[in-house]
Length: 373
Image 1 (cartoon, rainbow, N blue to C red):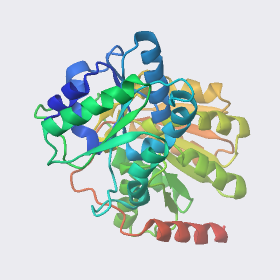
Image 2: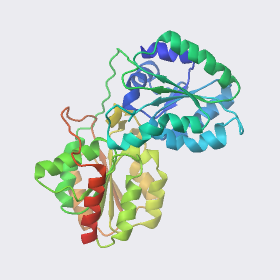
Image 3: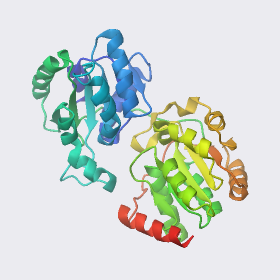
Image 4: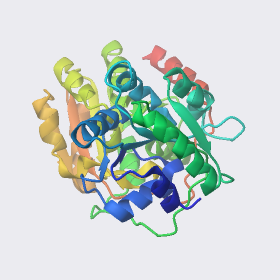
């Protein structure tokens, strides 16, 4: 189905969400049509943020907003769904568009398997009527379902369209880029040159995939790394938990700008506790690059100032490999919490692989290594 026809059937003029590769056609359409004009389209920090923003839109306009997300984001909307939007509370209607990763019977990555199994059930449990859209879904079927949904929305209920892989298409090309020169994979290679055998907790997406392949290329074991394949935004908290319980070991967190934004309260917690053995590296390309490249707001904020305001004793930003190597060397020897923001280009090589070990193997190997420290 052409995404233009899908959007027309929804009849909405305000969209907010967190990008998803399964919804790339919709994401590209929204950028192509609206850009990031906040009157019509806001890329928010996390899905709960989206639901609250959409609720404010409804309160101000009386109209029905659309919130889009990967199904992994369902967890982030449970609280606002239950305690804000529900018809027993404020009865605020909205349309959720959910990319169905890990659909049963469709091969996907381990972090999506269980989430895929419970995607529709979670919506059912939260009282959200849903309709699954696949490649075979016709515009007539969509229009008929939307007519049914309108009566539910009018009564303050929420509804959802669950989108299967390849169900939506968009023909126009959208290019995402920035002016930064350093590539993320090379940045991570430089990081591993300094970390040696120190444990690393890496964030969701291509950063963890690149770290895995760098270890392979170097002939190094993977036991040093915890690859956070899911749970976007929580890598720095995982690293904090490791650092607090291994005080004699330098712990490194390779984070991303979209992940940091998703649960930025973790920065305040880190800054308050100030673990002396943790280095927090935020690779900032101002984009949700792993799922297509749509922008985050991180390109326009001062990450260093935020970290310092939250209590980080030291925080710096670098935009060259010379500066990166200098700061990595300082961080290696530095006793105290330190943040390094690294300005990064958008893009990855086309033949980037995925970890060949399972998530459980990764966890067990990492734990066995930490037990030796």
